[in-house]
Length: 194
Image 1: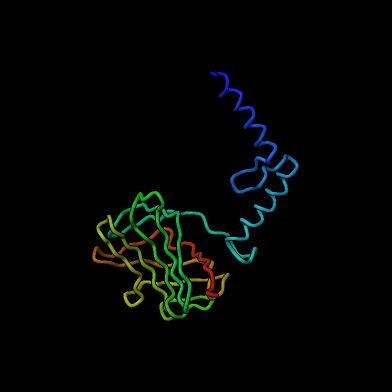
Image 2: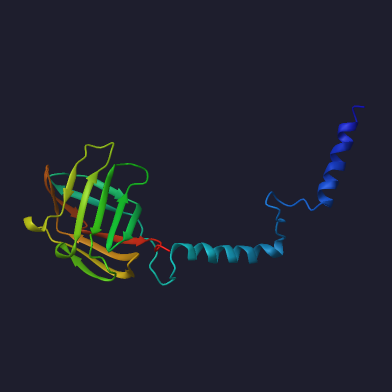
């Protein structure tokens, strides 16, 4: 009797092989000659998911801003999120590892239409602020106080944008700060409403 479990295992294995033995989704594992075709089609679909237009620029790499003036910090930004709808564009840069809790915000409020140069007269707001977990420091470029600010969108439409934000500095309760470099990437891809 102790040999019965050992006899049942080979029998069960041969039954599974005879029935197809596919994976959990009911799809057979690819043979070596099938693998290249599957990989090629998967790669093509993965790259097309990010943008509807393969000519649209890829998401930019992270960058570091050196703050000077009223505040001296070196802030790395490597994660971007955004919204683009109803004529507004909002792009947020953060640090994925949470080495700091600053968010760098680029906005074109109510006047975003696609490629072009935008400034404070066309709804641009550039801000650097700490989120929860920080001291809630807040700085913004202020044209009325002499700061220059602009966003140049080189590629995009009502729901996408690729370009550069630029400012000569920002101000807050702590005083005036400079940012080196004084510009950073703007990138956003959203899905138009259906």
